[in-house]
Length: 585
Image (cartoon, rainbow, N blue to C red; front, top):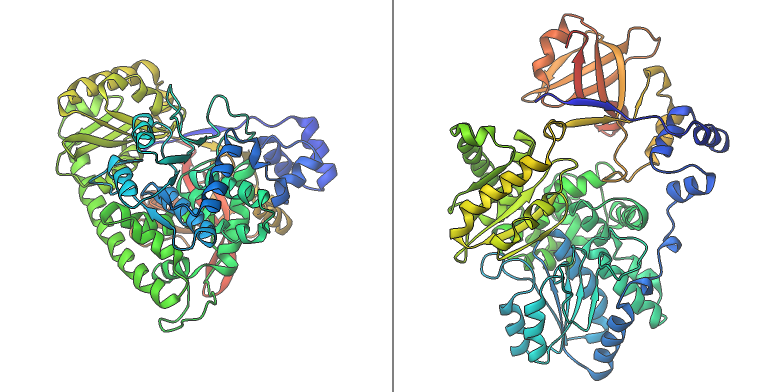
């Protein structure tokens, strides 16, 4: 697939010159900072030196005082509580976080509950409420769900079962009548940072509780690994508070990973712990990044809920002994392998459906339904088809007499708004700009397909349908000095809102060490024709089709990330090439 290269406009030159002087950095680094709305020394210090003391007061969140008072009442009266969360990574890390912290107050009067993806569906369920009533639960703390559960909260209220909702999804027209509804996206909520993960909202609740009880915050900070995983897996912006939380959570994972996470890392071949080693040490082959949380840890935590029960993911993260953690992690790793096979099979079937249907191929959106597809992987399949055809995509299957599915989108197109436009055809929907879930009665499917496609056609532009590589700055190899790389590393953790910078370099040639590695990757050693610099190693994944043209010695341009490669214990500089273009292209 061809990509559009778009070079970002240079930042304000006065701010760039000021940062160059104040921080003693070169123009390229100063420009990268202005792209992140940083123009002063103090703003740069806040960015480069995250501090937990810069987190916002949790009581700025609407209903926080009510939530804390209700928990204190439950503690004082010896009530039974339930920690309830969604079955994805954000939900299970949220449950682990809140359950871990509150169990010291409630002892054996606390339990957790994750709804069954297939029997109960997303969010708060009537089955979950009935279970709580049967067990004599007085208070449910719902995490990463509940903001649209108006009728279900009314049902709980009729049975004298109180709810505290901690969510981060967009609210509907009516806020549920729970004891407290914590959601920074509420119109009446003045909390300064709107992009917390569900686990992040849970963390703010615990922060407020700790503050009220004058509890030491260090114990709470010891749970930030869970918040970091939720931030990474839920693809929320790594800016503001999320950057602080992700920074310290990632640091915790790299230095003192909980047994459950280390067991996951062991089966991911990242931890070098021996199979029979049962202490709490950590031996990583390299430092973990947000990408590792997204692509390695997140899918394994998710696998339990996709294929079996997400409760096992919570048990894994709660495990305090390596032996127990490894047993759970092994079982989950096998489920992840099963998930991969299902994902691959369904993706192939979905691609074939489009290829064999000319009308589908010409559409501006993709909406596919197969009643036999596994509900647990349709979100992943939607992402893969979006990558392949690069257009808003919805993958649907059957579940509990309904058609249910997951939506993914392309840059700058709000798929949530597109689905909202079809809301009268739906039983339920929710989500974000780029990812959403929905369900409908089977007889509404054709009307939904037609209306969704019409909406997309009317609101999407041709540019949005071509994947874009946004380039931060043009740079020569000679500018990639050790100090430059050292400061660039401090821009991490990278993620939405603070993506790893993309550089462009022109007039590049290979020094003659070009080779194909793996199935379809290029390993190169590059020089710039017009500049004197040492050769730089590079890797270009899935780009072996350029081999012959590069081999002929033709100069080309590259877009790339600058990263460090760890091999056999040695760390070296490497360019991770995103795209290659030749002069005649």
